[in-house]
Amino acid sequence: MFPKAVIDTGPLFSVLVINYDLRFAELGRSPRFTSELADELRGFAAQRRLLALLSSIRDKLTTAHVIAELGGLAKSRLKLYGADRIAFWRTSIDLLIQWEIDERLVRLLDLAAEKSFQACLPDIGTTDTALIQLALQHECVLITEDERTLAREAWRQGVDCRLVTQLIPLGP
Amino acid sequence: MRVRIVPVLRIVQIQRTADSTQTDLRYDIVDSGQFGEESGVAAVTHSLLGHEVGNWLAQEGVPFSSVTSILKELSETGSVQVSVEPRLGPRIVRAWFDTVLNPLIGSVEFELGLLTKRNWTFSFAPPMLELIRPTKSYLRSDAESNLEQVAELNLPLAANIQTHDVATETLLNSVIALHSALISNDQFVDLCNSLLAPENLLDLGIEDIRFVFGAYPASDRIKLLGQNVVNNLGELPPHFATAKFWNRHRKSLLQALAYPNVREHDSSTAQIAAHLASVSKTLLNQVKDLRSRLSLRYDVPYVRTSRDKLTA
Image (cartoon, rainbow over all chains, first blue to last red):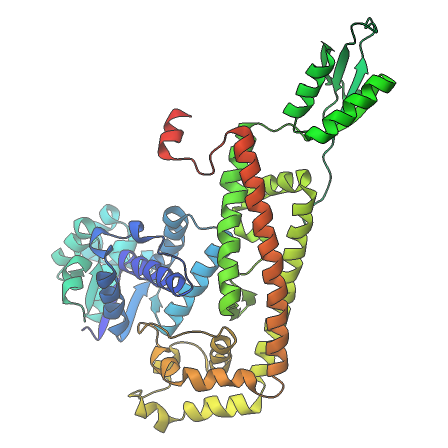
């Protein structure tokens, strides 16, 4: 669907959770984390569509901020420990390697020096501003679940920002 | 982890009361707890009749047959020392259920399922079995002390936990050896290279080997396929880059487990896994039995419902 896209924490975390649950389902354990997903992703078909959609993007870009946030989310929302935590990370890292996720470092100093971000940086934070900057730099789509903060600012800045809720029904 | 096995004793001294007479036999019970009377915390129950001593012992979990012989010895000698179960309360039992017994039951059941499927959940970098691991790894890190307490009070369980943990390590070493034998097997390497040849990939509609392995370096490609083979992996869902290749060639790649110098490791791994499965079944039964006894004795449900939490 998209040759290149910048992916926000929400959709990336969702696919890792879906991927983990899928892997466990193959091993004989029922899905455990469906309740941690956004409402529109509670159904199996929607989950498959999101996986298919993101895996079909040839160049998957994200920022180091997003990768760092994934660790915090796995801890706070999934509350995994021991063998399960290791399995979640191994499965997730395997998928991200296979997807050749392109993790870019966007420096705070560069964002702060950019005139167009001076107003939004303190307001929406480094992670979201960096994602907007990356999408502008690569002239590509930005995919997020966050309509209120990130999407609103991205649209204001002229980024083609797509919400997961809009994309799921269109997925392959 | 090696579980520290230290038997926890609770010694009770029962003796004839000083002013007891032959027509009115009475006894004192000195419950010295875990650390003995020297600790100065012994609880004394005074002046009980013989049948009251019997009731007290029964309440402490002493089997009926032993109670009879203890009372007989008591009437003959005037004093007796009895080892009884350490005293637990519902709060300790609740903590054990939530942090040790319930997680352990779920994990060991899952482990048994993996062993049956011969999916060792092996990953090569670093070499580990992701989901077949020592007991401690199945629990939250802050529950380790509770596991130690359970083990201290239940020696057969502690011994089996050690056997289980040793068996998981043996299985890991065996799977590492199997993977190593496989990826250094010329026949397997030749098979992989031939299946990954550009013309064969083009047959699958794959233009570049990069689209099979993503960002895995070239040096890891055979290792990754070997990992899938060792784990007897089923079909992969399509969102994995390797899915198209693996799903097409899975059957022929899995046959590599029967290659000379590989099959010996494979069958040895299967034997070790069968031993682990047997140990795990015993462990599972022990843990379930302990949970059942504790639940009934201390009136603690296996799982706390939200209603229980509200009334706690």
